[in-house]
Length: 214
Length: 214
DNA sequence: GTCATCATGTAAGCCGTTACATGATTGC
DNA sequence: GCAATCATGTAACGGCTTACATGATGAC
Image (cartoon, rainbow over all chains, first blue to last red; front, side, top):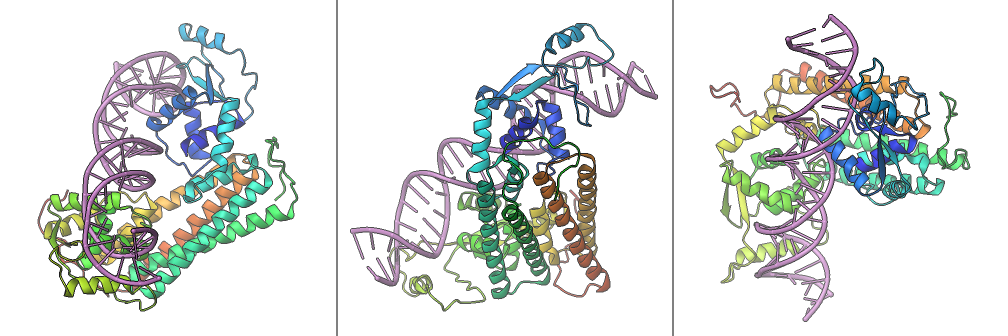
């Protein structure tokens, strides 16, 4: 799941580990606190597997977007700054990762296959849904919907049959409410997918600041 | 977390492992599919630690509802094995667990301390909240509330500041809705706690006994 | 001169999973 | 005789956490 998130972020732009973590917790609220103890090994593993490539680079990408984008040929600069502490950009060497073709294959594979069980991994998939083909999106949403509906049925029958004490009952009822809300959300998403016939392409396209219709 | 659930169920009545698992998935929907591979070791661990005591026994604690519909084969099997103990002992011997005083201490400790982070463990705590003293209940609910409110603030600011693509945005917005719903639920629970002055439940009176705080 | 932040990593361990092993009983 | 259900367990592995180690830099 962490791999998916990493690949998804790097699909957009190259980043170093620390920054990946920042985005994980701020952009995707889902993977709220991934620790470095799992992040860095994951990056090394992905690189060893050929899904990522790393380069030492300064690439000072500020929290607001629009980096200089000329991220090539920054390696010399960092080498210089390491022994020559210049005021702007002389930190510990960053390892800037970019995704490879193999990594893109892995990404779409992870994005597509299996595991619609977990709420977090599902949320992650939806967050990266623009990288999916339209029909893959819909099937993802509908698979999730059926899972939730089944769970809702189970919860309902459990509430009916067993006599729970007020607290436990409140928990199950609240769980049911949450499931209903999730299902309504999915229905909205599915409807939106259906009405707009491939309005947004599955290809990653950049829209500038807040220019999307919804 | 599994320990807490086990102890909570056994606080009510003695059960064997297989039945504990059934209740875990049917009563508490939270710990939906705990596998035997984690359940049985947990039981053994708790017993080794003195929190549980086991006895071989048929002790057929029949659930509140005896489903007459379908699959009476199992029930029949159990009854027969009770009436007619074969030389080998009939059905495979159940290990019926009951909670000890030490286990009750552990239970209240687990129930009280730490970890309001995770939704599941929190839900579990609330489900067993009748075993808590009224003020402990309220503080549990309020701690959770403040956590959720903080997270909501973070999610909100993240939505404002960063330009996400429509799918990611939809996920964060839905997350925010979920948080709001959770907070409303908590508010209702807290209000209910405040209005009724210690109304229900046979609370275990172990609170306030002079011992180690831990 | 020391603290906070940025930056990368390793080691140990927790908590859970899947897969496997065993075995009695009943229904078909 | 074979699958399904009840019942208890072991072994191996997975993913993530905490705690620890290192180090540069800028601010106070």
